[in-house]
Amino acid sequence: MDAPAKPDKIIEELGGCGRYQIRMSVIVHVIKSIVCFSTLSTVIISATPPWRCTDTIVLNNSSSCQTVHNGSEINICPYKACTILNDTKCSNFVFEGHLKTVVSEFGLVCELDYIPSLIMTLQVAGLLAGNIMAGQLADLVGRKPPFFTSMVLIIVFNLVGFLSVNWVMFAVARIFVGMGAGFFLTTQYSLLSEFSLAKWRVWIVGFPSWPIEGCVFALCAWLLQDWRYMQLLISIMGIPCLLAWFIIPESFRWYIGHDKTEKALEVINKVAKYNRRHKVDVGHLMEKPEVKKDRKYTVVDLFRSKALIRNTVLSIFNWMGLGLVSYGIKYGIQALSGNIFFNFFLFNLVGIPSKGIALWLQNRFGRRLTAMLCYTTVGISGFIVGIVQTIDAPNRDALTNGFALLANIGITTAWGPVQTMTIELYPTVVRNIGFGSLSVMGRIGAMIGPQLVYLDAYIPGLLYYVCGGVSVVCVIGTFGLPETMNADLSDKIAHKNEKKVTENHITNGIV
Image 1 (tube, helix red, strand yellow):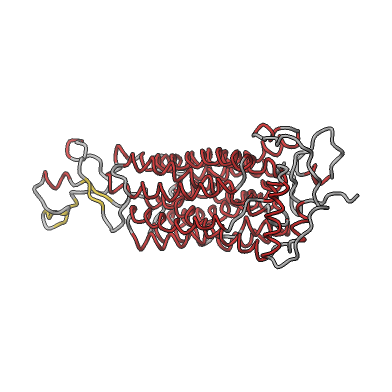
Image 2 (cartoon, helix red, strand yellow):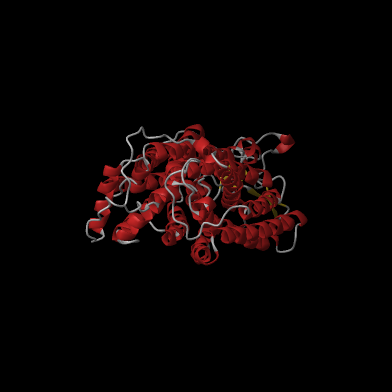
């Protein structure tokens, strides 16, 4: 009797990376645009345009912020002054330029200047909640339901944000927008990777759709110049994405992992038909499952062996570093010199070639070494920016922007190998639990990022010193993880009383 083949063998018989897989990947990466727009829009929406206190205009009975004294112009409305004569608190502000943000709408400056960073942290808290719920749900009920739940949340609560009448209502809406993004980001790669072979996973995970979409959003934001219409645009874009429900199937590997053979066969035959392959006879490929209750897996299963404990704990350092550094640098764009739209566009643009290079590096040198190189780049660049800001060096703005951009390249590139490695470390039955749980750790780090941006205004260099130090820890953590390049995905956790599994499975930490 032939031994049952693994699902990877089924994918080979379906044509490997065929028309169905390509169509599915394109659709998911297009849908990701509304997630990207929603997540990154907070950088622009919560930005603080140049502003002045205008109380002195009333006190001086003047209609202008400039007055002439002995033939010279004197500025009686200095930038960012929270007090006026006799240390009286300013109560009226004027914001310059065409950009309308939540800050200019609700006057979130002076004693309220902490609110923009608070809103960013609340959005990341929503991401964290989404990761927790989606990680568990995707392994309990399948990948598809939480995947499409993400779109509903993003569409509805961007619309709520558009209709916000105060900053509190807007902040609550951002929590649920973040939750929707968390649902999507937790399920997308597992769903796609479970229809692909090992050599294509780096392309699925590492394709630079996020930076491309970030560049597009920078253009849209520059054209709109209004925080409300940015959210309305995202809601409108999301409505057609719901039609993908009729195209994207449930993961057949999830069905196999949960012994739902008949439903797995339906999906497999559907893929075979679209790929113009003969119907795949999978009767000899899968064992007939014993009649037993489908086991429900939880986060506890991520710690069922020494190998799993090692992989999970070390990955926690990686993901927390990814979140803290990524969100710290991204939200830190607001404080850089120059035009915010150009800086935003540039920081996303450089991610396109860097992710392309990372695809080659991952398949040539492995996921682990690629991640370590990325973290090293971030560490060196972060320390340089911190030093430049601390000693008030010549050409400070240019050096800060340049090395901050290099640090951004490093951390943007690191997402690909870390996410790919995470997917390959866990079997199907706990893959989304593992990915979701580690994403939670990433969001905890990300919640710290915006607060570091706020504190950096009072302690110059703090943000980048922390980013540099965290990157060093990530290099050490990554070194302790196993290499997963060219490894087949496993589907079930092996039990102690089962026969000895292959060395490849041991390396992947499933025993």
